[in-house]
Image (cartoon, rainbow, N blue to C red; front, side, top):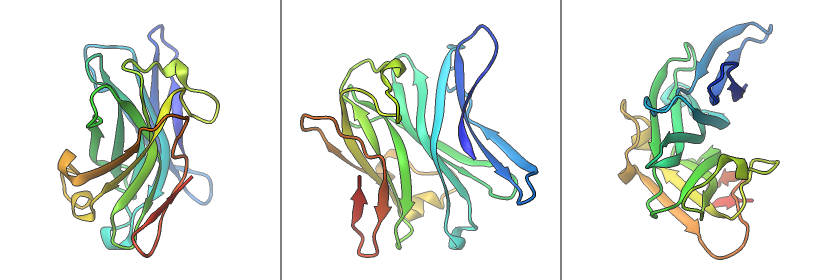
Length: 193
C-alpha cells in the first residue's frame, strides 16, 4: 500500500508512505518520506506509485511521486528504492527539472526488459506551483507531459541515480497533458496515456 497522510499538529504537513502487509494482513514494515527542508516545518510529500523491482536486483520496492524541497527549488519529482524485506531506504533521489521554472511529479513507472526504469508524470508551467492546483485524479492545472528514463546501472548503484543518469522528454506544446500511465515495451519503446 502507498499514499499520503497528514499529521494532527498545527503545522501543515503531508508525508508519503509505503507499507508492506503480509498475506494474513499483518503489518511487516512502514516507510515514510520525510521533509527535505529542515528550515520549513510545513512540508508536502506524496508517493504516487509503487512497483516491485526485478528479480536480478533482489526484488526491491520502488516508489515515485512529488516532494517539496525548499522555497528556492519548489516541488521536485522523486524516486526511492527500499529493501523489500525490511523496508529500509536504500537510496532516495529527487530531481529538479532541467528546464528552469518547471516543477513536477512522477505519477507512474514501469521497467523495460533492459532493466531501465521509465517514469511518466507532469511538469507544471507555472513558476510557483501551488499544491492547491491539484484536481481530482492528481492532475494540476496547466501541466505538460513528462517522460523520464533512469538507466539500470544507476538503479543498482548504492547511492542511486544522478541527474546525468536520467533522460527526460517533455511535451511543452499548449494543452493539458499528464502521463498518468506508462508501460515499457519489449522493443524499447514506451506507451503513455
